[in-house]
Length: 204
Image (cartoon, rainbow, N blue to C red; front, top):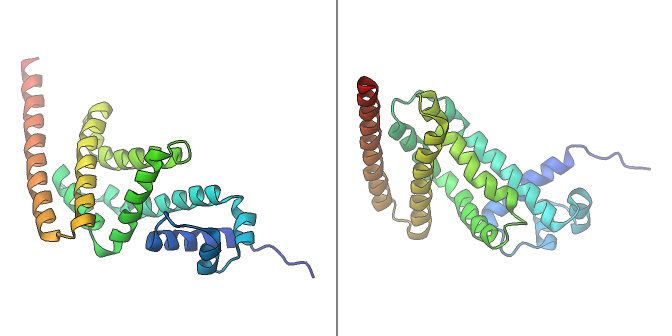
């Protein structure tokens, strides 16, 4: 009897592969233990994904979708200042449930810098997805798009630096205090920029 293909199987496998990567990382990935972990033979994995490289590419794309979904609620949140929005993002980034995902992120980022062709889509999304998230509220507040992207770049660099420090040191108290100090500085910069805009309009 001919088996009917399960249309949901590739998506189910992809989610299971993402879970495996988040827990175990990418460095030592091979198809045989991966297949055992997700309940599929290496032959089945190659049937659905074509190659190990394509499997990894699609898994990382699915992982980014999950990350975007996880932060989607912050896009619509009515938070009064950029710093308040950043505090909400930091709380979500540094929550225990997010730590493994960010360890994977830093691992893949380092690998992608060595293999930019293979991981081109990841490198682009690693910057653009976050710039879009961080620049959107600035644009809604009236910032020109190019200026909003520059300010978002500052915030993105801060987040990644703090998260990398935390993943390495596990010193939550110190890092949380440093984040708070940084965000108070962002509030000051924002206030100065807004005053400068008002002054500039008045003198025009």
